[in-house]
Length: 176
Image (cartoon, rainbow, N blue to C red; front, side, top):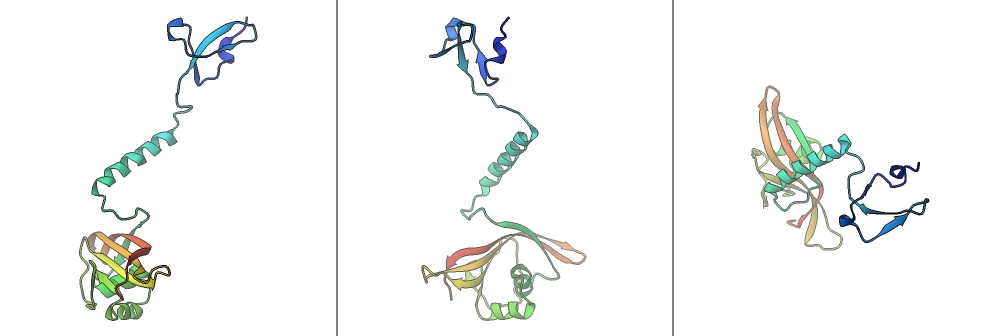
């Protein structure tokens, strides 16, 4: 006897009821016409599918605090001894402390969209720090900067753990 379940792929559902007849049918090798209907089903329900769904759900939760910034940031925890601006700039930009001090004093650092030359400023939760890098080639009114947003900080025995979101090449207005 001919087994029809082997002929029809697993993504199709065999329909025996003529009331649910679809707009097409197929002719089997035995020359018997059997109606069937395509049903969209997942091919597999592996754990990776469920993991992806969890990631999507978490992203939807984070979209509630959408601030309009690009989502290509890096989440980091910066471990430093103090919250001073020059120390924070040195650690977040990866430059020596003497160069970080020069950046702050020369006006190449902005805190919350305002230029500052106070190297002793204590970084707070919610601060947005821009470190000027270079002028944009296409438009001199724009510049590339390292943007670091302070999300939270914790006091530890070694100093501070500052949780940040950072962008390497963030396009900002040219304040220089």
